[in-house]
Image (cartoon, rainbow, N blue to C red; front, side):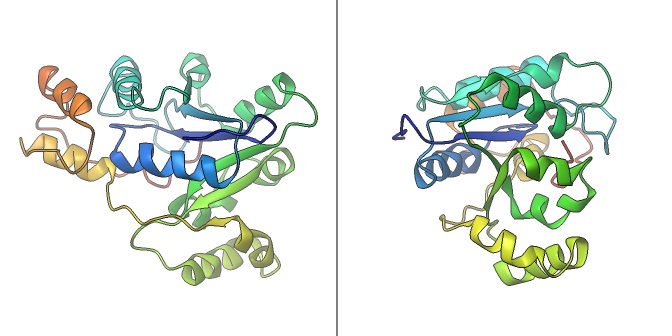
Length: 221
């Protein structure tokens, strides 16, 4: 991953439960496409919309993310959301980041089209847009025009022209944390889902075995 000294800071939030090949590969490609100066993975706390604990503990998710990023040493991990009490919102994280970087520094919020579709449900979403510019990775099953139609319904027709240039032209990758958890729960191999170090960690710590799978793709952070 090549970073640009004067580029934006790219913040990529998620539960990373577990971190998949798509999380690592696509975020690096997005950072390069955006000429980023930093790529920061923000490990999410419990979603305000899903107050149950995720299948893996905070410590396990952090360990897996760090293992997944060993081949991407320029990427950073931000754990501030894990240390907040109560629901943790993206607006809180962005407000802190805005106060910590130079006033001229641009913040880009890296999200998937699943999150873009429901962005209007996020806590203080209009304020989020005043602090950062989203950068959207198109999921393998999504059509950009369909996503923009959903954004139009949630935010109004004028939002389409705003969001269209935020859609990134990246490869489509099918890996999903939900599928990785499902496979791990059934004892299946995860070679095509996660890096080998993460698979070894899941196996060694007997993560996800026999759990009830829940899709957190529409997380509001």
